[in-house]
Image (tube, rainbow, N blue to C red; front, side, top):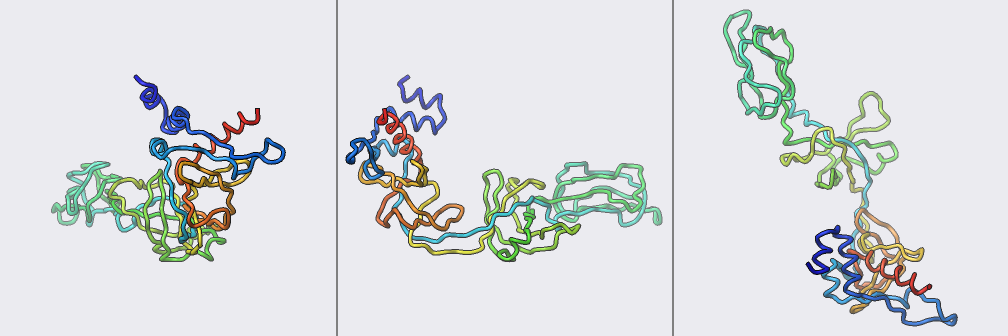
Length: 311
């Protein structure tokens, strides 16, 4: 087995990338020294990497441009059952339960017979049916028992659920109904809209915002904690880069600018930001091509070479 195949076999993707870079020998160059003979600036240092190697280790670039920042307010909450898809089923007339056809967890279709009751008054039997398709989530009916007006079955349909989000007083001035919201849970994301905002029960110090969720995939279980990023404003900026492009190097925030096969760290001054992008106030030009993925490889190479240079 050759060296690169062995690396691919035993290491994580990130470690693979770092070791492949070392094996394929990109290098750090220092283009000049100042009067002291051993000091350098960001403009004097860069990493050399061919496009073939960049492709191998997953380095991608983008040309700097203007764009729109989507300003959001982050809130948290839970997935809850759609009240319109939850039913507590009772017998129409009191009587004896003579037959039970559904158990806890049973999948039932609309109109399916859940149980048969013999009426106390007419002594005739009638069916208790489900009003919609769903799952039996509670059963309180057994053969030979009296119905006595109690809930016999609870049926829920989880194909459609709600996000219930807590909105605190200091957030209410920028959050309103019909605003777009991005809902996130365990890596899954979906776009929705704030449908309505209601007071919290039991006089809690927040109100509750609700957004509809399609749950036919089953990825949004009832009770799960989720995050909501509510769009509160949009701002057009002259220049922005993805947050993934940013690195901290020598106490400054930098992005790596590609010039042919050279990658130069460029200190930047940042402005407003959203969840994905950040405004650049200075340090870049609209014509620059910057690294937007795996830029940590260049930072690591500079720091490694700088340590060797110091010695």
